[in-house]
Image 1 (cartoon, rainbow, N blue to C red):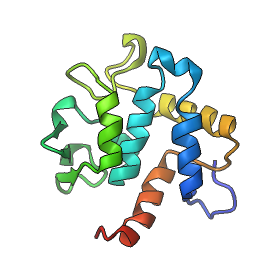
Image 2: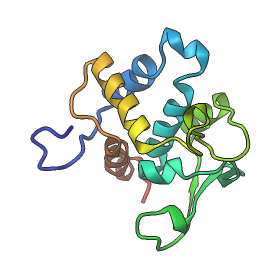
Image 3: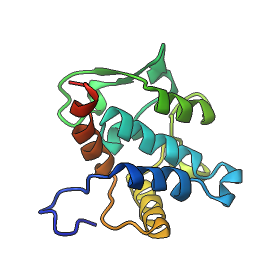
Length: 155
């Protein structure tokens, strides 16, 4: 949901990011591992600036030697393959999330090969409501990354 931002996704502040990742995406029910894929998925989007569809297309083999490879066949413009270094915060999320070989984010209950954008969007909307945020979308992580990267010295 976009509110008064002229069709732009919300840019998240540091406290909002913290609420999403600590309170929103980590609940008592998380003991069942239910939210770990989503924390990792949104972490990849936040730390790399990739689109959610690019993150959903990742294979476990795309993560190696401290990097994530976003293949050109899965990027929006299909222009080039990008290799992104894994930052410390993302490395922690990846370490606690141990998927089976194949799709990094496999589908729920074996219905689909990988998680769908619809399922991811629903979890984010539920989480947003639970922690009292408004206007967060899956693209918010990309916009937030693109806003914070220059101040962190990342070109």
